Length: 519
Image (cartoon, rainbow, N blue to C red):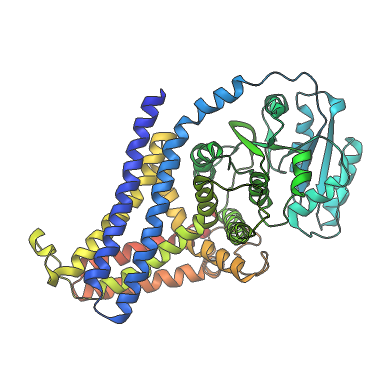
């Protein structure tokens, strides 16, 4: 597909985001000027308007990033044209951090890394085992010994994965560090041969490649789109601003740059913090949109919840870290550009903000619907009259809602040839809204990331009603409230409001449904 056609098609999606922004702001503005008849309603309307304006800004910037990503291939071709094949082979540490993972999967994938197309005498393999399970430790230790790999075990998990990596740095001297997660199976042995030539640029700190999952079920393939959206659209745009995120694995880092930065910041998502520190220390980064290893598909909703909890907890930590770091005078090595600043702020807010907006929008909708009794049928002329203000507000809100469904559906149809997965992505965002919000609150309060705030733990068997209800209690209770309010709206002949609330009730019930169906 030519660059002109690609950019034209993307403009259509950009137009959807712009329509979503205009519709949302129109709804909020209409609400504050005409729908606020009480002090409570005015406060809600004013808050909602402020949040909608911010959301509109994020929507526009997301649309801009999506459009801009179409030009990344052209940029990468120019960078690649300046590189030369390796004249010599620097030493590389190939690392796999592990924490109570399935030993068979670890051994299979670690053995596969030995197939890397690179001189064997220049490679050193490290198995970083933080496992607390004694059987797993014994199995992996014996495997490392017979496979001529370095086995490093810690008795505590201080610093999480970052702590294990920093501990490894004290035991190694290799010039480059290649990191793979335990579930990633190498499919392209040219990983080092393809990435290392770019490091001729002495200021290049790291290279991140595209991360994807193996094919699995409809559910897991849809979850794969979560990462695919980021790596195909957001990551290329960020790379043009030198803010490409090191995603923790399937990437390679220059050891000297890491030393200058001071190692990996010891947070839940150490990769994002490291990426930011690399940037402010005047290093460059690069993103290669090519898959070299595939991860294990996420087959259960519980595993997705664990992943999203960690991401959103870490993103909130990062936002607080970024704001604090930005105010430290004399400690930043260079001034951030406007685009890079927006990149970091939007990454920190990210899905946390989107999830909070969904919940607040729903709460505001309840007040809007019951602000006035609305006829079930009105004319276009009546819609602009004050006495039918509630109907007008509801229709504006519904139009915003409809566009928010259309956007992911169009995206997945254009780029992944699936309408069903686009709608599933929309449902997953609603099903995770309470979980993501809870993660953000926990991080803000400094709650330890592995406490009962998270809906993690072992995956429950599918189809168990009571255990599912326990895991999705907040969402199910909220959904039940919406069902009751929807019924009440119907009783008072507020047909639009009833349909609106009942639809929201179904969306929030999706958390229960996904736990029940996918475990």
